[in-house]
Length: 217
Length: 299
Image (cartoon, rainbow over all chains, first blue to last red):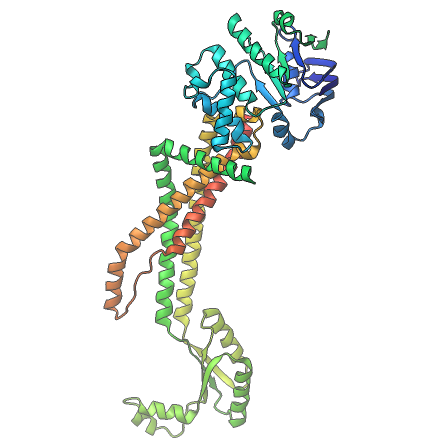
């Protein structure tokens, strides 16, 4: 369960990215955060994974209030999330498999078990045959799939994606959203920030529409 | 616990991979560290050899306590009692008659002694202290000089004190030199790690975003610093060993010319281990400072 109450984020420059936003996301829900550029979508995603802290209000994720969370607790909170970024943030100096192994190494899983789980994650997104390839050799859609494999390999309870289809063609975007939907079908909470609203009809998610930092729907 | 070992093992492997990924850079860094540690290490070992030479030449130290000419049997008994109580070491009483007899036995002195109208020599105690360090000898000298009927205390160890003072001064100089080179080692590691942190900024950012703790991010750099420093220390030990090996022959020859059997003592296993550990520790320290400051710099 994710609960936001009067959530406000004001940057030091005085710019207010979010103003008194309140919502609830029950476990296992698929949610789209929509809105135009500058609406506050990315700020909300950053607040959810504690990259930013709220200026006012509260944001409770998995029972922990992001506003008052200690610095040392943040890594452990983030392990509940699988995060997918628009620019993927892949490591181009290591193989596809090694990119997926990184989250497992962070939690101390190594050896054959880690390899088996990384290969299973790659299989889920259809990239197992490319495990030895370097990310630079993958297409944009495949790179995004690799980012998803890395996000799900630790079996997170929440998948969080910021504009995951932003740089993709229609077919690749459709493939990516299908993968997110498949994870949602097995109980994973999926939160996607996107300015692309025409997928709403297809997946009928809970929608949090932002306009100039305010929640409108 | 298993995860903890796995993470440390992974960090160590990661550090080793980084070390061998750029062999030329690694070799140059090791040479800088190795040569930097070689100079003070060689200095320490040479001073240790000098100390051994000094101990061999000084032999057992004696303190002669001469009594006043008017000291009688009662006074001698009083001093014997004090010596028994204070237990400075082995001691013996040399009466003025015995001293005169010994003087007579010295070649060419018999006629001179025969010409004396009375025995001018005093009674004396000759003491061989258990602790023959210059500090202890000086302490005993002051103690004996304060006892009644003692006219003069003779301590033939002035050169030992001078030699000891020289060794202490040289040791201090080597320690200062070691401090400077240790700071150099920390600086070399600091710079190497700083470049590595900047080169791996993307990986660090990703790792942070997906739940890596500071420990997970810092650890490979710490291990890298410790490995580099430790290998530098080992190289220094090998260089010192090589140098001592080259000097051993000429040093023994020189010693033989003075009738001695001195053998130059090279770095032993403990020295090698100590240098390796010291290098590792300094490398770890340099890495720790560098990682803390560099990560602050990249946010």
